[in-house]
Image (cartoon, each protein chain N blue to C red):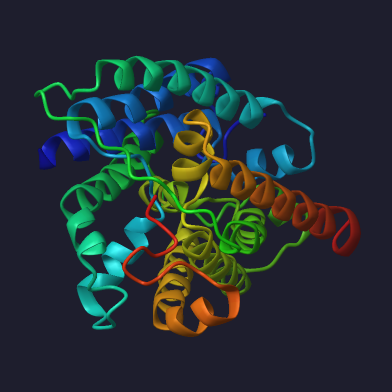
Length: 148
Length: 168
């Protein structure tokens, strides 16, 4: 299955790269409302994924017959606070997490600094989890803020 | 507008949206995995950091699929940039160069700070554009709607401050 995940990642990365979703200029144009490209990408991806999810959940089984399991993301204050912070970073870097890796593959040298920052940021979050959990009322550590 | 990497025309937004939906749905139907990239940062952290947060079963269990998926993202970017027969290392940062004009050291610092916000913010929010914006929104999940509205608001305000106020 490792090869399957690698290929799916490569297709995902290729599409993000060729569509502007991993392009600094397109991200700024999205946030300045100067281009519909990214809104069209996200909107059509959500509409089509939603239809597909309905069909897959209706079947209830994976291709190999296992029950479909979709981990639920908990609701907590980190959704809004973390979302706002992530938005600042998405604007500054012109990359969200997937495109950081895509930009590195594209040969954009500065993307390595964005990856370093993201790993330090995620590391700091994990190291501070107990304190943040008290202050913000986050879910217990075995649940976490959720994956994804 | 052309992409930064080359002069080939960008994919139509609907083709790109369909491609992203296909990857998301195959990941679930074949692998029983919920799309999400930002947890991959925790997976990488879990390889070197001993804190209990990173050694939880839920983090370690994700490594077997997320790490190859992340490697695939890098490969997909490489193939895309090599498509015109010309892959190059570049410092080109598009409108940033025209409006702000920092050199390499300044860009690295800017990107590192941006990365801190991305890593900390996505983990606090429990997901990013893929896990909340694509998967969660498609599945009508309230936390994902709140997170998506929040990161769009954060990005809109920041880009307007940078390009309309500070460097406008």
